[in-house]
Image 1 (tube, rainbow, N blue to C red):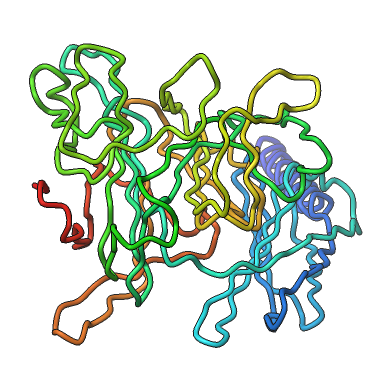
Image 2 (spheres, rainbow, N blue to C red):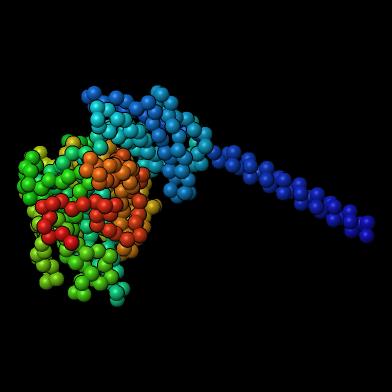
Length: 411
């Protein structure tokens, strides 16, 4: 019995020693796994725009589900020793209020290998003013029919007046950028356009010319731009659709099938498209969208192509863009950025196709109007990852947004 007890004690001791050794190895492994890195923020300031005092630096390792948020010092530098080795997307952001306007500072690096200690990384940051008009809600993924089929004609885009002054949408353009899908193999654009332009596959334009005042949008009002401004819940279309868009202000009307009819919505003009496909086939996997007011007429007969490719694209100056939103297939694709960081430093996703979900801006505050009513102001930091959330069901005029008075056919 004594021998058995001795053996038992020895075994427990050995096990304990082995376990302690394993814990020591794990602890040592964790210590070895952490790596350090330095991020230097290089800011380009516009005339009269003050620099932020500090910047927020976010490290995202999407593969491991790891995120770290740090704040720079006054010189725009952050040092961290808390990273795990891997591939990172690094976003830098700040916000400055100046002379009644809000300026957003954004920059990023994507697919950065941080594997060894002491890496130094420079992130170029540019400032942009928050737009008065924002893309407020986008339903892009489509819906399922009662029989399990796939339906995409109920896509819509809501544009909201997020400012304190009346805005006019005459001549405003909306389009989807290239490449159509998030990809690691980004096209190479001609040098004279690469850093100063974004590139569109399709552009639709609202009637009129920028500067005209036929379509006012008061603070807190929004317009709905529909691929097809119909009641998609009717039997002939898709009773499983979450939306009725018969009251939409504008639609991309093209009589390409017998199911498509000319609805009460105002028809937009197709300003640019890659011939011969004269239609708006926007991917249900998540595209990159923007609204802008052209400062010159759009000539659909001129275009550029990426180096070594034949894809036709319309080049639009970054300075024209009012708002941009980048959407992707799923979370693993967020690191595959297409849109320049100055327009959108992030991306988001509903995570699937035909799942009856949309993306919507987060409410920043509720403002009381002089007449006693209220309206919502949304976040607009030019970072879709931060500004948007995924809804359980799409909804036009969410959060009490109003239709403009000139829409006499609204629901």
